[in-house]
Image (tube, rainbow, N blue to C red):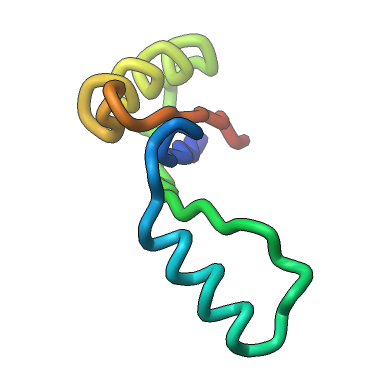
Length: 81
């Protein structure tokens, strides 16, 4: 089983890297792009025998305590088969 954790800035936090990418896309002629927000993606492999419920609970804890800064970031966890 695998888990995927997406971490990104909260919508209220400025994202200068996303703004830079958006500006670069405009410079390349992609005028339809209104905004870009950048983030991080973590792919995590889980040991055999771990139940889906155990995986969800543990990965949620890891995401909150280790992978994301809850003051400025939000996260989303997906458990993959």
